[in-house]
Length: 113
Length: 112
Image 1 (cartoon, chains in turn yellow, brown):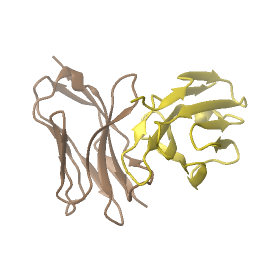
Image 2 (spheres, each protein chain N blue to C red):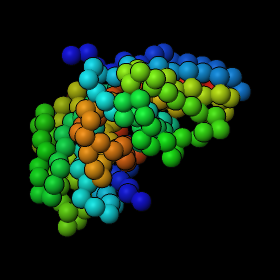
Image 3 (cartoon, chains in turn brown, purple):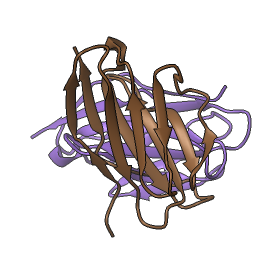
Image 4 (cartoon, each protein chain N blue to C red):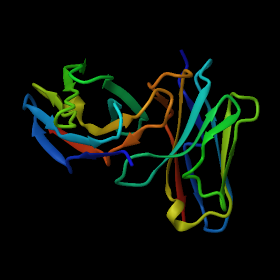
């Protein structure tokens, strides 16, 4: 079974630029999560989707971050404009609806200069 | 709100030593508890889980017991190997289908 796919794996941008990350969850997983992992800390939820609807985006900085999951499968997370403090690893995870075991992708490491 | 606290690292051990990584949690309900592991250059992988009090999760020689009375879920392994070197995260989910709340992670380094 293929795992959660993410791209790119690494991205370096300058502050005020924009960037987008892509995630393809495990086939059949209705729930998709985006987490932000800052160096030395545990992952923190940015947004959770159930199919193509948003379940929880309370911790998403909506002035600069946006995310979509238009067809209920893959998802895109965007940052515009980026700040230095956005340097982190962005993790995508998915799960079957109603189950608490989440499967994580390899992450995208973002460096903002 | 809910939170997870785990011991600060790094933890440095010799091969075949006994491992304990402490984890305590704060939650209003009856959460499910997890240990995830992150090997160098890889994504997070579920190591073990427990969904109710007194449950013991186990995998690859690692064990953790859900202790409601002490709100703890300490990770243990009787004999570590060099290949166990990784970052270990304790996490909770207050109900199925909700996001995980993670601790800060504990780096384990095992030398031969």
